[in-house]
Length: 317
Image 1 (cartoon, rainbow, N blue to C red):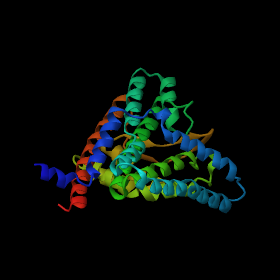
Image 2: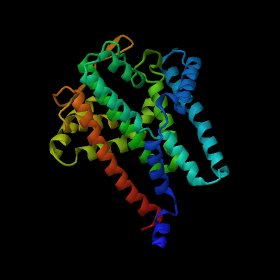
Image 3: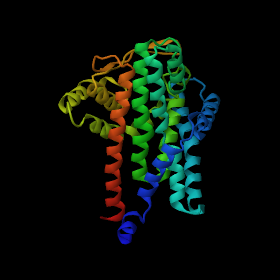
C-alpha cells in the first residue's frame, strides 16, 4: 500500500492540486483582500502613464509592451524564487492557491439568488458591480439575470477550469501567470473607452490561452442530455461572439438550460450591441442556481479526469 502511494504521489502534482482546492474551499482569500487587487491597481497606474491615445497603432504597441513590462518581471521573479524555497510542492501550492478563485463565484451566486428572489434590484446591482466592467446602475431584473449568469459561467471557467488546465501543463507558475494575464485583460478591457485599443493585446493573449480549456469544458457541459442540440447551437451562434473560448462555453450553458444570454450592454453610458446567444428563457434566481449546479458537477468531473491524466503522465502508469 505504501509503495503504491509513493508511486502515485511522489511527484506531488496531484497532492498540490487537491491540497490547493481543499485549502481554497475551506479558507478562501476574500475577494476584496486578494493580492491580485494590488496587481490590478498597478496595471491601472501603468496604463495612465503609457496609454496616450495618440493613434491606433501606437496604442496597440503600448498595450503589447505594457504586458511585457507587467509579466516578464513576475516570470523572472517566480523562476528565481523556486530554487530558494524550502519545499517545491509548498511553493506550487501557494501559487495555485493565489490563482484559484472558486469561492467568489459560489458566493456571488448565493447572493444573487437571494437578492433576485426578493426582487431587490439595488442589492443585485451592488453585488455585481465589483465583477463587471459594464454599468450596473440601470440593470433591470432581466439584465441582472443575464449579467449574473454570464459572470458566474465565466468566473468558474476562467478562475477554476483554465487555472487547473494551465497548472497541469506548466505547474504553479504557469497557473499563476495565466491568472495575472486574465486580470490584466479585465483591467484593460477595451470595452471601456480609455482602454480602446490599448487593451486589445491583453484580450487577444487571454483568448489564445483560454480557447482550448474553455472549449473542452464547453464539451463537458454539452455532454449527456441534449448533446446534439447543444452542439448545433454552438455551431450556429459561437461565431457571433467576439472571443472563441467564452463563445463556446456561454453557448453550451445557454443551450443546455435553454437560457437567453448576451444582448445589449451599457459601458460608460454607451450602449454596446452584443449578439444574443443561448435559448429563449430569461435567467432568474432559480436558473442561476441551476447554472452553478451544472458547472460544479462538470468541474468535479474535470478534476477527476485531470487527476487521472496527471497520474499517467507524471508517474508513467
